[in-house]
Length: 313
Length: 216
Image 1 (cartoon, each protein chain N blue to C red):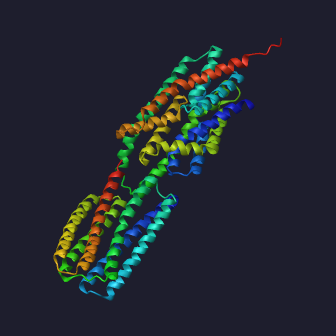
Image 2: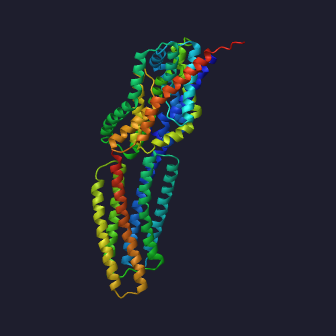
Image 3: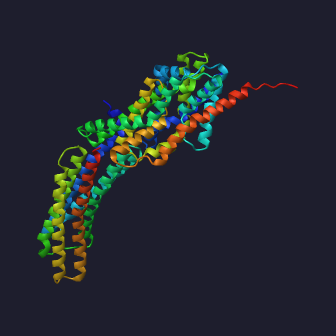
């Protein structure tokens, strides 16, 4: 079980960081209080991981064959990449670092599933753009009905708040379902645990991250999106959840941060304003490029180092 | 069914409608007080109505304080919170103008000259009409009913009519041979009453902006 600690740590940091993408806007703009939001997110992350997490786990474990040692190496390499890039203030995606680490192990084993990798890479590129497209469509549809609803300002307030609670729950469900593979798929691939146990352990570790360490990240990161009006914030939150859920059905873990940025970009397209600057887009591109490369390099380095043997003279 | 989850919001809604009722009472007392003061220079009825106006104004302030407390207790989402507070703060300036006009007459011992009584009565009538319309407009906005734009247009017309009367009174005042000190006091009273329709117009335009803002 000790070998699982690397994955649990990765899940914990994923929960602490990605909770802000789900409920950050609502919490930092005081539409929801932290504890109800965190508890709600934690519960739905576990439900999502247990009910719909299998597809992503199957995809990641199919990228290469792993031994138990290699599973530990890949999860440690992914965790190190996330930590390193966070310290260097570079954008980082847990999904991309996990896949990068698995590629590293695959190179070492000289065995890689290129078809699976192609599918994963395509989904990464599709995440922000897909979220933007979903946001534009969803905004138009919801706005059409919202503007025609015979509701008072107070009813609109209740509607938006209830919508936000729903989208936060749905977002947490989708995050759990999609990202649990990042946390424990390698251990399933190594034959350490079965898919159900992996989903439960992964979901629980993400939930632990949300409950113990997400508050500060939520209050700082979430504020970047507060400029959105409540209706747009609701649409971005819903479209992020839908995007991630869509990729869950495909069975590819993607970045929730990139889905949120895509959603905000979609609002900018509708309103004809610059919601995401070129710098942010450049950073996403850099994340696509660097995260898997760094994780792959670290996994390779640790992998080769673990093969070194001390030969006494 | 879900009202339990939105207790603070429901209380804010009730308080706003309470405020609008109190606002109506302030207008009635003010209007009756000024009319009685124009008819008979010094009477007990004026003092009584001034006192009633003051009491209602204090009640309006208490309601505002309670709304403020609830808002700081995080009732409503921030965007709506800001809109409602701006609207109430803007609306709440009107009772202050009404009360101040009565205080000027009472505590500065102002007597309305016969020559200006008719114009002043007309100015008060239109100003109170504007207040009444703005109160209706706010109610329509809160209940999401149509007609706020038409009311804004009437309030705007009233405001410009009040400006004309205000200028006419002041111009005639300074042409008259009344005591110069009285002229300044009376001018201040006329400007204060003129401010009522100006403020009603500002509130009305704010309601229009908020109505447009609600569309996404």
